[in-house]
Length: 86
Image 1 (cartoon, rainbow, N blue to C red):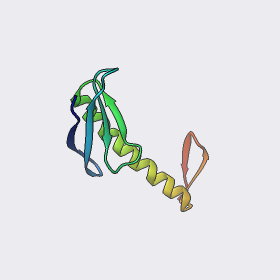
Image 2: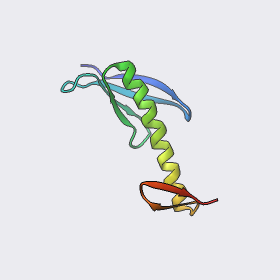
Image 3: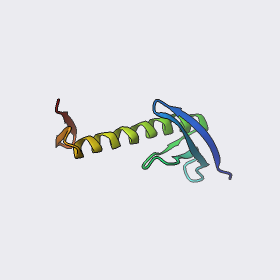
Image 4: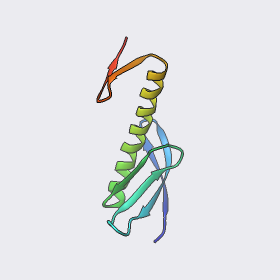
């Protein structure tokens, strides 16, 4: 089965993503080029596109929090809940 490339739009811009049919589970695996950790799966191509947008936005937001913690802007006492310091 063939891989397909599509550009998806997110609130952080547009990203080229690779969609590949998943033989074992069915549906499509999705991966965003250039966004570390942005991988997802959907039962249909449409669902996979929607979920990769969420994965891209989540990966970008997580990297922002990590940088803010490193810079001393955010202190994470309990890894389950970030605590913002103004």
